[in-house]
Amino acid sequence: MTAATVVNDRRAGVPAWLAACLSIGANDSTARGIGPGRMLLALVMIALGLRGLVFGDFAGVWQRIPIAQLPAQGFFIYLTALVELATGIGILLPRLAKVSAGTMAVFALLWMVLLKLPAVVYAPSMEAVWLGAGEIAVILAGAWVVFATLAKPDGRFLAGRNGIRNARLLFVLALPTIGLSHYFYADITAGFVPAWLPWRHGWAYLTGAGSVATAIGLLFALWPRLAATLEAAMLGVITVLVWLPPLFAQPHDSGAWSAFLMSSAIAAGAAAVADSYRGIGWTTRGLRP
Image (tube, rainbow, N blue to C red; front, side):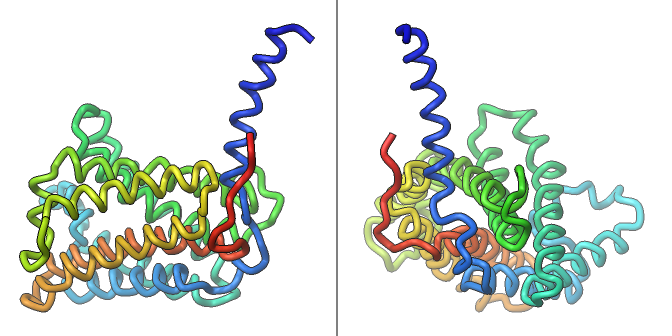
């Protein structure tokens, strides 16, 4: 065997090892039932749908659509709300769960492609546009994991073990965009930290580091179940501390509901990914290269 062959084998081995790390516990039968992440994702999508029907407008993220010029905007507003409501209910029903999760994933993909990727292409050096795409990617990853878990185990890309691995990879790629935004926009992030908490910039840096650490933990299978669960919990706590008080203060405000539910949807996407690790132990560590 030549030195070049050895080098090539090692190069080929690293992607295979990373793929194996991302696949740990994938498609375990334990994860096929309704877990807390899937339940939370369903409830948030139902709430988003009801919000749209009650207020008769798009949730905050959809407001980037040129609404004033959108033909039949009322139709699209209620169609969007009904899709959110139907897919949320559907993933809780065994007979409809797979198709509902697939529809939810396509919905989130269109959401990201139509509303977020144009900004990334237009201003790729601005971290904020990556943050927006990353947040929707987390929701997409959660819906994708639910679909892949319920679909055929031998799916090539979207379903089964490979689908779960690829959805986890999307989650891993999305998390640094969220974590790094806490450093790029430290003052803004610190401004969201409740005033009664000391060391507000410190919390901004700590939570940003948490998202990056979660991505590393999942990529290299270092306590991945614990890492994904802690990330979902952290995003949930941020939602409660930052976005719930304005909602209590203005319960009839559409924007307050949008902010709270969108943050909840991101936390729910992370929780759904964490569900896919339910077949392994909390302190399971991955493979050696």
